[in-house]
Length: 341
Image (cartoon, rainbow, N blue to C red; front, side, top):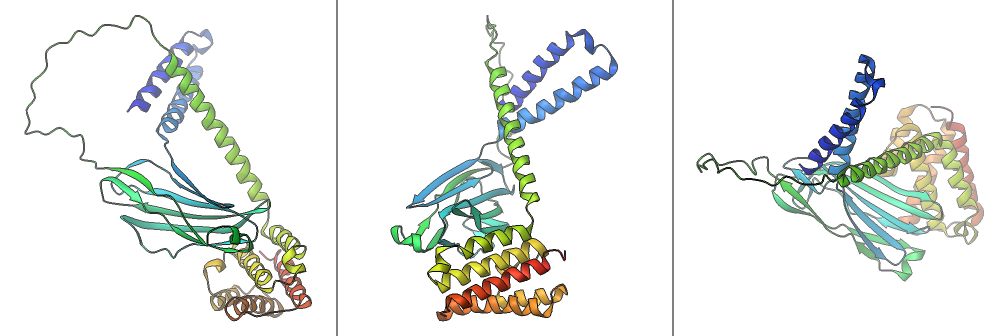
């Protein structure tokens, strides 16, 4: 309610300002003024109402940030919650399996973006859209996360995110009870303020400027992301792996795990195959259904994924030459299929 009143007062002040200008005497000018006032009202109201919950947990070099899109919602109104994990390169983060229920919340949608490169670090993101029919202060439970890799030796093998509390308001709250009669109160004399304060106007202008800046940065980042193709991304990741210490020291499990991760994410970005959430057999079957891969490329995909599974579950060990051959096979598959779509 306070946010709406601030926006209304701001729009009235701007309208008085524009009314004084003689250039706005025409019909077209008045129409443009009305449009500007409506846009500023929407932005100011949305900015004032936006209240994001956030909590941060750190364990060694691993940072976990959990954010809820709203601090207060109505019953059955969706809330978006994101768990963002920032870890150094060489660390693997394992999330728990997602069910249809998380505490008192019903899970509507799940989106995972794992092992995303960010300089010399990696980012894991899990986003859940949830709703609940409970009322009052409803807790978003913490998620237990497993840490693995060379950098996990200096930190705990697991970490839990902080809990968040979201206020759930019923649509029936704050309604008058028709059985409780209240008579009209007597007239109350209220002293008029002697001096008008425009502090609210300055605060609203600052809020709108912040919102516009954040929107511009978001649009710029989205444009940059769209300009990077899946093929160029995969080739860059393979080049980084080729010169990494894991390949030089013949760490079979790390090299094969990274090759499998790059190949799966490439298939998802280039062809829409949800390879990161599928088994090796499911990936191979869906890739065959695309009818866009040669027999040689299909053999390369199946071989790399199968050897990654064998290294993970059966401790397969390969020589450096064999690892370099598999890396070259993945590169050849990316280059030959990159222009198909």
